[in-house]
Image 1 (cartoon, helix red, strand yellow):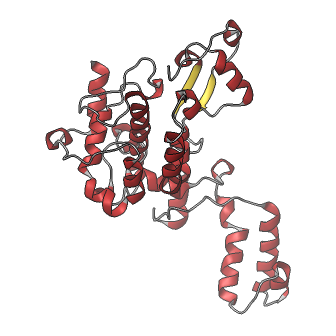
Image 2 (tube, rainbow, N blue to C red):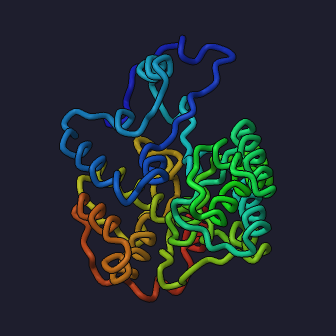
Image 3 (tube, rainbow, N blue to C red):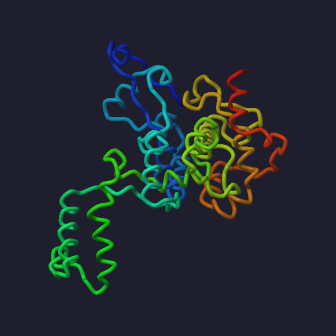
Length: 313
């Protein structure tokens, strides 16, 4: 009953496009997994009596909410998806990394780094101030109301404001590149796990970071799967070979996901979770997660091979 809703032919009228649904766990984790997810899980698990799965997972417009209440089968009428990169594609991220490397000659991107947004008015003012200061004229400082005690630092700031942001394409400006890169390196999102995707970034010499900190299965997807399993089954006792079924009430976006093997990869990194990923560690306890010993033989095969095997069954 967790995904049941009422049905009406009106919601299936010709030409109507299925609602696009963003999985809120993935999007919130994209924003601040380490800070927000435990509170969200606490809030939802405390109010599970009578809750429907669509009420937990769907972020719809008012019209889409009204339509979804009339739909008999959400799997047929709602386009589930993961928004792992704030609406950007992997090609966009690849392009951003190329630009960053072209400017800085490295991939040392801080987690909070955001691609600069170009403001023509501010850039023009900064350029005017810079030109005035380069002529040894105090007018430059007056233009921006800045203290000129440290003239070298001031001129460096002005150069950044007046020029460097123009090197970024408009599409990429405002991208939270640091957040995305951090999650790629830790294994939160499904990039390094998939050979074809990893090859895209290997080609530009991308630095994947410390291998010891990499989670062998995409953690955000695993957490979504575990949340659904917990709601449907009532516990977190997932068999090693369990895969998300391609049927109701399980979300279609997670169909065939090897949840059991993903959990095994997480358990394999128990020490890393304790030392470096304490927020993730706490999140798992919301599901009564047990840190049982990992099945080491299963770890020898990469996560993606386990996934492909599930598709063949």
